[in-house]
Image (cartoon, rainbow, N blue to C red; front, side, top):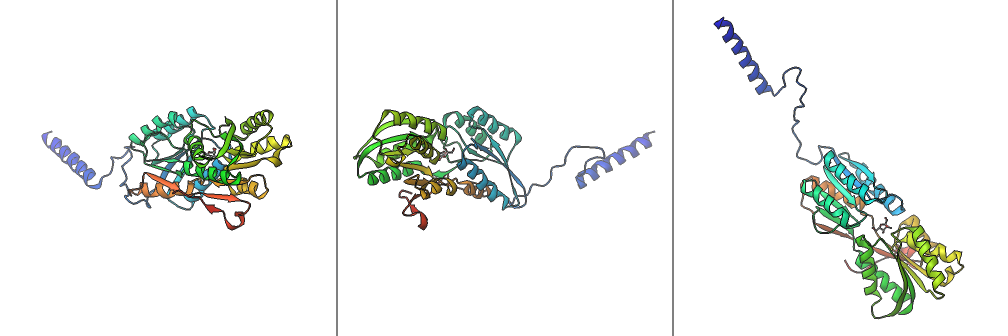
Length: 328
Ligand code: FRU
């Protein structure tokens, strides 16, 4: 009996030793064996969660397609897209879902700054690298911000308007969503651009980046004011909405329309057609977001802010590719 016991002990000891040396699980054990993680960015497929605030505007569709194109060109990046349909609460939930899903990196283009700052900070604190794209959040709790300088774009628009109107005139300002940072910056920059002139903002409204709202607001402006020289809209859909309202009132020929975004099939086409006097390019940063995601995932140090440049397009310079605006 004692002999049998010691033979059994010997077998068990040998078996366990074998397990230790080969690293195999006992037969029937369904636990997953941790695979040796590769340390290079090229060997692993990384999963990126992309939280888009809405896909109702051509510019955001372009951003997603820029991200997709850049990611598709690489074989180690997979992007999961979520569309919050312009609903801040939905976008908060999407970020939380990405965090609990354990994505390797998060890209977010937030609808609004204040309500989306805490979930972004929480993801970052949980150790997930976060790239904030185009619309900023408050504070600095993210890995990197990528976007153009909206204050510089607003100021360039103000300078252009000042020059075009020769320092005087009555204008309508159709603002982007004022709970988002680009709306503020495009307004403040513009005010700097027209500073010291006799240009007067006779009507302003928050059209929340949306063409139908811009059209409605412009109808009110047209009903109230007989003399409007120019409309400065914070994006091209807004400028186009204002144009449509003016055309319906048969007043579009008396007014100059200025917008921001400069997409080839939107703003640039409007300039070409003579609908807009000028548009200012607002790059999506989609390709850069993937370029920098790779660097972050490979453990490289990246700048906290990457400022993208912008160009102004008018009928005169469209054929020659526009003109770079000042600032950074
Ligand atoms: C699209 C958009 C653009 C604008 C940007 C600002 O949602 O409104 O037209 O330039 O967002 O964040």
